[in-house]
Amino acid sequence: MRKNIIIPLIIQFIATFSIVLIFPVISPYLKSIGLTFLLVGFYTGIYSLSKVISAFTTGIISETIGSKRTIILSLIGLAFSMILTIISTSKLMVFTSRILHGFFEASTYSAIWILVSSTAGKMRSKGKYVGSANLVGSAASVTASLIAGLVAVKLGLKAPFILSAVSLVFLALFTSLSFKENFTIERKTIRFSVLRSILPYYIMFMFDWYILFSWLTFIPLYIIDIGLNVGFIGFLIALETAIYALMQPLIGLIYDRLGTKANILLTLAIPYALVLTLIVEARSKVIITLLFVILALVSSPLETIIYSNVTAKTSQNIKGLAIGCLFTAGYIGAFIGPLITGILTEKYSYQKAFISLSIPALIIAITALISSKNERK
Image (tube, rainbow, N blue to C red; front, side, top):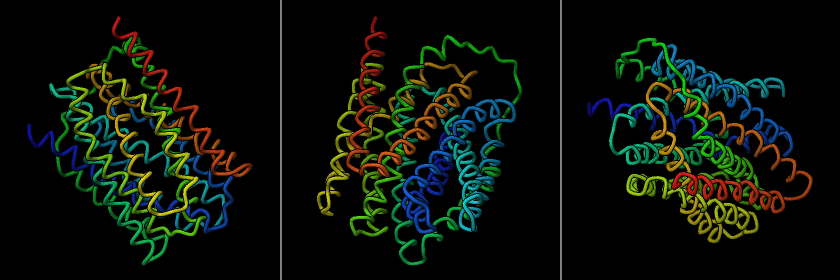
């Protein structure tokens, strides 16, 4: 039993490490090969759009061939997309690599979270386990962000992509050997009323990732534009993720203790957007670093509380579909967010583009309050 609990967390760590390795360098790399702000936003949007298709189909596929096989196939595809990105010599090749990257990254994340959610569903402390999974993923993100910054400064912007591909292939081998999945195809009755009951969490997750992928795409470019380097970007993301990680077990425990009453913490989306607006006004390393600390604190409850609600409200026989739909919603937000933010940044400025993030933040807060009120009735 203990092995069954730990293995998904190990897979979560290595997969997140491999994926996040390129986060600090992807936008600078695309700019370095001649893309405009608009094209960076467009390619990020295309990358996210392919995730929308992938996340939904992954939920269905995992229930057909099992989450283990889905994870392995996704990891191999993702490794291929990393290599294709750095050998691209035309906009068409970059376009193709971003589609493949988005598709296989989403299927990797979705399949792993289906595995985590299924494991959590068999436990009493669902929030604690989901929080632990987020902690592990965040710890991997810290490690990857620090390494990515150092490797990029020393070896160039392509180096993190190569390291990521190697790590993904290793994880595919580890997953194939680490556990046996007792998987059988069963006739499933899908209760769409259950999916409707968690619709508010899909809406909140969509706008959470709208904000998340917008700042992950454009704050690195802002940092470079004000004369700071990629290493500082890696440090900032690592710092933010480390604090975020340390908060996750606490958020999980709060959810286990309060249940849906903990949804009030989702209203922190409003100060989350406000802090992002302040970051693109700042030029001092000290102030930007301090704002990233606050950013980590106010954004920390969102994903764990949403995941925990979805896990608690769905039975084992529709976990794959429920998590697949959740990630589909997230990737819709991840497609729309960078695209709109890219257009606004190109036409106006970073500052005006980031002020617009208050709109999805407000939607998250209002939806959280309404859903909490409805569930208390």
